[in-house]
Image 1: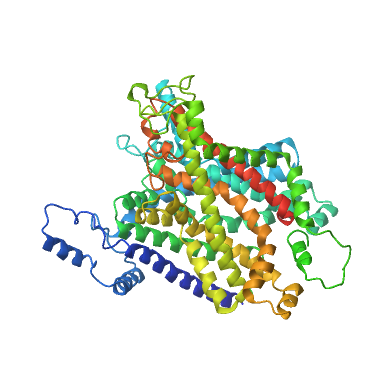
Image 2: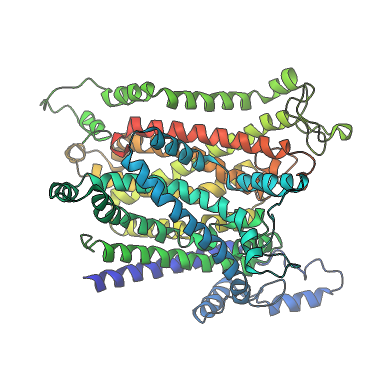
Length: 323
Length: 308
């Protein structure tokens, strides 16, 4: 049953992956001939040189051939080469990936650590003042533009503190070139962007855990546990929370691709040398192959994350049947 | 079953048999409206959005009568002025009046948001309804397309598309809607799948109604509540997305002011004026907050099943 389900999901995923390549490539095809950075409009090149260089890049090939070449490469782990510096897109991705994972991973961990207790408190004291203020904060959390929150934090914790001669937090980059990037230095650089990013997770997940917890606590087996004289603490944490956290796994699984793409705006605001910033900068420079490679890479993660979340959910909650 | 299903019962062609207590026509809409009206905070938030929209529409009037400045008038003698009587919210690096630019920016930001919602809803509803109604391979193909569109991290798709089509307000809305229609289609398809099993659809078909008529006259009214909820919950998110794209320089291009692109260069003015950073963001925050609160109120009123 499970094997069959996995096989079917896997097959569906492949269809989606192929669809994604087609969409991105059709989009790229609209541009691939139009402007090539460094070659077109370069006064040092004669028209015949331009034609030869464009042919080298495969720009004169018909679309289907170009598409097949690209697919063939991707199957072999080759995402093509950057149109600007000629190094492989994969090397760019691998170069930036650790930074992005450091930022988003920290944010997700902070998000979980803060949102689980907040959600439980909200559920246990439903309708209380604490619950209401948590709701207000989380509703506000949905409405704050991430980039603006980043700007305000920089304004307060970097600019204003520095102006008053107080210790301040760095506002840009993953480490400072002069300090050499020891662990303390990295944490200082991480503080502001990770706060912005985790704030969003906190407002989403604490609400989610609250409602999940409320639902679990209304179940029969909780009443049974209470009826047989189990202490409230054990009921809440052993039986309640453990089951309430199951749906969170799906949510976090769905957030896995966010590990790569979720921080794009934050990375740009904080000059964080991650994958999102890479895609953004390269897009502005018309480096299509890099943008496409990164997009496709991120999409693969989305599909893998969804699949993983689905399967984990079934492992953790045996009531789930794969039909 | 409460909520949308009642529409179905009312929609039944006069069969001559009254099952249970007869309800006056329109009762579902009346009840929803009553529930919405009872939600004071929700109504206040909705009125705030209406107010902002009115201000946006009457931007030239405000320029003329209240602020006395045009959004693109440069005055290099009055750069980085603090908020005061001459410039209520101060001026920017080119001496342009911030309040005036915020008011004109509302035109762009709110206009694009409403346009995006309209586009996502019309495309998504059409696709979802066709997929749900016809089923079979039509459904498979359309839904795999939706899966595909939704699998690509939206922000990358936006970036890719906005370098392709240098956006104006219309193309920007189209770009954001090119992802937004997917979730609407899923939602509508789900509703259609359940509604089309009901007897009244069979009855309508048996008296000779064609597919198009069934979809427009009988299915559409039944998915309307879901659409209303999706629309009112969507506006806030779309304002946020659009502001982020403008901020990144991928959306509305200067000198046309939008709430997002007013912050594009914010980082270079930190040492000159914190107000320049604070005001546009606060405006976005308040607007999105109001949209979300109103959206939640609408959801609770129109679809009590979903009440959290």
